[in-house]
Length: 463
Image 1 (cartoon, one colour):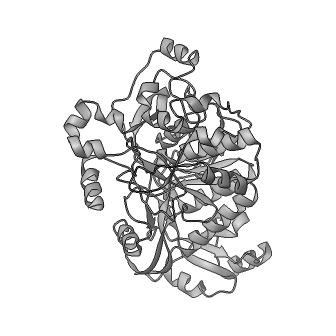
Image 2 (cartoon, helix red, strand yellow):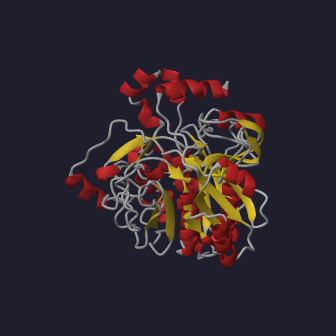
Image 3 (tube, helix red, strand yellow):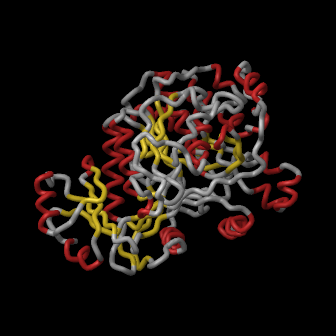
């Protein structure tokens, strides 16, 4: 019943979903070398097989090259190679735009002079996690603590965000963009401008400090851009994790994800094991360097522990092949050293769209819901303003604000909470301690049917 309800809502509302697919058309192939393989051995391997590097992440011993399926099968058993498969991608997020709210400059000035934002009455989600603003008086964060946002970039001139954006943001989208189809992408490392609006919306949930209030107003943020106007290569995301860790960011937010076939095979006899193992290496690399990684789970409303549901949802998104057999994971949230975040709505119930599994999810936070939409129908839901009571209001491009929904807006609230814990208690470079504190001081909503830990900033910030 749960899945049927969600499927009907998708027809009414353009909820974005992050998925995975294989780039069979491009010939791009991911090769993950064994950890002990040296630079000299890699170069020898490339020369012998007449291969040129398209993309490289030295820290995890991964490269991308161009080759066909015959070459992949030929090299699969090479002793230097841990895993090899056709490169995977993450579809771009579609940002919802429901009745943007315009404001005049004088109102912005009033917001800066106010302890609570002028949009506070529209922020039911922030009222929940901050106990109606109480947490703001418990600790004022500084930009010395930094959250890296791996996403579509940030609007650096947004008045609610500009004071939080610290130096050092990076663009990971190479020249030409996705499969060479984005001529405006020049590969400039400092081009972090958001072309989609998703990253700007995620940033607002963390640090907005103006008309809107984030969970940690004023905390430092850096953008690691992996989307242009189209999809992103999975390896760009893995590279961004490594870069953020190298930059010593305290928290890494991933409001994105994909379903990966980590064992077994597709109908073309490959799987996603190269990217999966590279993700593991990158996450462990960041953890060892002291970063806490927070990731959103999928927006398909499925039980992650149900193997067949996971195979079915991946099959529904594949273009050129199907899963023959194997194990599918919701990545990167499924990894050991990642805080996996699901979504709740205004009733504090698990959102209809949020993936779920008690043994998998670390914490829930408000990301919106569709229960009112389902109850009232789209016309009444829109005309009578019910959308305001269950969607998430956040920052958007050109200094504006939009309503949106998804686990993407739950994860940054948790990233903000992690940043506040680090900033208040001085637990920099101690992800184990931070994650333990988050787990211990989250709230269990015992009046609800499904018992999950919920984000509560007052409890996290009260000694």
